[in-house]
Image (cartoon, rainbow, N blue to C red):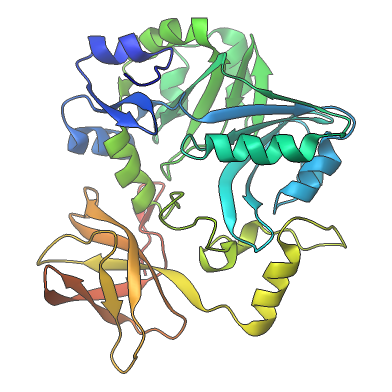
Length: 361
C-alpha cells in the first residue's frame, strides 16, 4: 500500500482506477482518459496533486538562500507572485523543476515533484545549515488544481464571497492567501485555472463542493496528455540531473542579470561558450503509429540521431505527438523509428496546444 492523499477516499468513492505513482496511491482515470482530457480542454476539470512536495522557506536569510540555489531569481518576486524555476547541480543539470510562491517578504513556498522529494529535501536541508531561515515540509497540506477555460467561472459557485473576489483579480502566476488557503493562477495543462493549497482536513469538503458545481475529477493519465500537448516538461523525461535547462527548452528561466552567483552558473556559461549540443523540438505523426519515449529520430544527411523524450496520442489533435531531443541542425521533416519502421514526422516548436488553440508550427 502506498501513501495516500487526503482525497484518497473521494477517488475510491468515484470509482477511480488507482495506481502507484512514486509511492503514492493516485487516480489514473475515473473511467475514460479521453473524456477527462477533452473536458479540461473544452470546459474544466479538477486534479488531486497533493502528492507534490510542498516546502516552506522563511526567515531573514530565505531570499539570499533561494537566490543561490535556484536558476531563476526570487528577488524579482513581490508578495503575491509566483515563478517557475529549477534547482541545478554544479554541472548545470536539473535536480528538479518547481514553482516558487512569494507569500510575504522573506517567506516562500516551493512546490516540487513527488518523485524527487527525498533528493530535493536533502539538497535544501544540507545547504540550509547555518542559514538564518526555517525550512519545513508541509505534509499537512493538500493541493487541488482546477483547470480549463471555464475554471474560474465554475469556481465562483463553490467558493465563498471573499475567495471569489480574491481569485477574480489574480493574474497569471499570481497568488493570494485567504481562509488558510493559497490560491494560485498556475497549472500544468496549458489552460487557465487555479491551484488551491489548503489544509488536509478541508480538502474532502472542497472537493465535494467543486464536484457539486459541475467540476468533474480528472486523473493522472489525462494530466500527462494535457501537459504534453502544452509542451510542458516532465521531470525524468525532458530533463534530469544530466540535462541542463539550456537543452530542455528552459533557458528562459535562467536569470543571468547582475553578478548573482547561483549553483550551476559556471557550468551553464561554459556550455553556452562551447555551444549547446542539442535542443528540444516537437514532432507530429499523422498516421502509422504512436510516438513513444525512447524512439530514435533521424534527419536526412545527418549522422546523429535524436530521441523522443515523451510521446503519446493527442486527443485534441487526433494524431500522435512527441517531444524529442535532437541535434541543433534540423529540418522541417524527419523520420522516427516505430516498431522497426521509419515513419515521416513533421518537426516544429515543442508546443502543440495552448489555451485551446493549436499552435504547433
